[in-house]
Length: 120
Image (cartoon, rainbow, N blue to C red):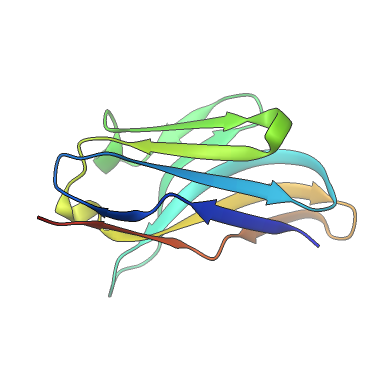
């Protein structure tokens, strides 16, 4: 069984920083890509940032220059460093992993979500 466990969310003031982490564990043969999505109340889930197994990254326009995604391949872990946070960054943040696993082959997996609230 594959699990994605996120950590690092919380309450922060505007202009502050947070670092999210997500660890993938289980019967994983290969990690193709990992990323972060977010969903604010009443809005659709949207891509925040994604990084492939070759290190290629892409970001939502709204977070470019403020957020940085990185990964530790040896630990199957992805990080999201969020700086200069704005109230509009408030959302539930979900980790996503595109994996090749023993049981399901190529498949997308999701974490349970971690809340980020930016407010004074």
